[in-house]
Amino acid sequence: MRSVVYDGLVRVLSFSFTATVAHAHCVTIQLGRAYFSPGLSDSDAP
Picture 1: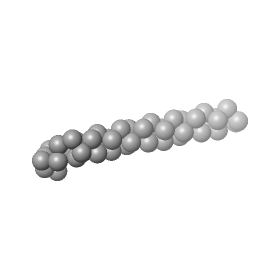
Picture 2: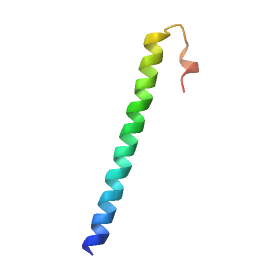
Picture 3: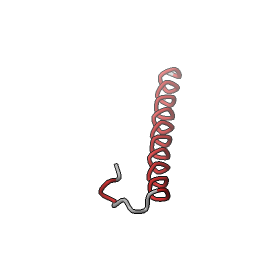
Picture 4: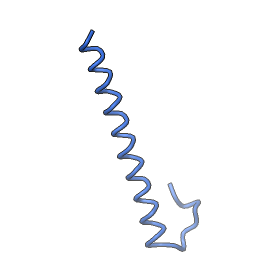
């Protein structure tokens, strides 16, 4: 039983960590584009 709970906890933590890194990476790209090329419209952002 303990291994099942541990496996589930690891999966949740791994997923949340991956999602956080992906979100931070996306925000960094958007901030970089807004800073280096302010002439681009928002429609060009991913």
